[in-house]
Image 1: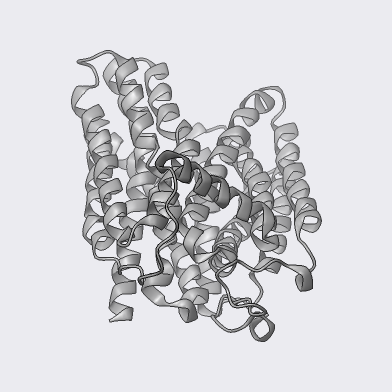
Image 2 (image 1 turned 90 degrees about the horizontal axis):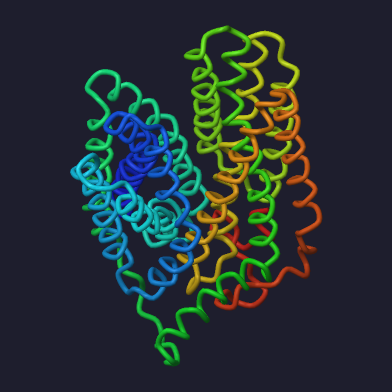
Length: 417
């Protein structure tokens, strides 16, 4: 039964995340196609992403409070799909500003399709299966990141801009049954009641406090926030680099595909033998991202550029799955959903900041922008070294047994790492 549930979990995660990865580029193309203005598509895309920083922590608290978090996750999927459907049906018939508001409301639920889903993994596989489960769950991110944008481009070219939005909606809704059937959380003692709204914000504060207080969570979060800003810069620069080296703008997208394929392949290899020490994988993968970005900065041929993004992808994929394993290991159970959705929000925001910085930098100097991306990865590696506490002094989550830190394999940390 557990294996059957995990198969359903993975299928639902792939469907929901692919739909999510399609939604942004699809709205961008839809706005351009129906209004003739690039600003419309950009505004819809910005609305869909900018509100996630607020939605992640709040939705995470609601997940942690819910006895059946899968039902709440399913409702979030349905609401996200309804927001996209409303934009699809009304764009071109109503002013753009209200639809940007709809996109912002849908964007509040965006972290549910990433961190909120992953937070339910222990309910599906149990603590003993977290190591391999995290690796396979990480593959769904990589697969969605590779398939979503590519499918959007193919469908928009072959059938028109509205079709990718419709397919994105269908994929998100296709994940509804898998989310609805996720296991219930075991009963636990009632928490002390407080003043309604205040208690919500206290729990939000408790989630941020746990991330800052628990050494493993703090190190993983700070490192990947800085690193993901560098990834955002690399993603913006990669198509420009391909176009510069080949003279064809369309060839620039090949580098993004190579980045995603490399990340997927690296995770597939790690899934066969999950590492015992995910913390070390975070550092190693960040250094690989730095090396790939630096190699891209000095690439003088298409072959070297492809090699550079392959190296970077070999870091990006394992970094994600290692971070998931650390969060599963160290997050207090009562705050797990909040920590995952908050972390997803922070990474989305970091990626957006890196992407925004990369545009003006690349306009001045593409090499300089890629060097800056490599510099951010080195800064992330330095942050890793500075933000982690000594293992013997690492604070345990309050709901873990004293003296027992559960590793990714489910065994005590001293045995698995």
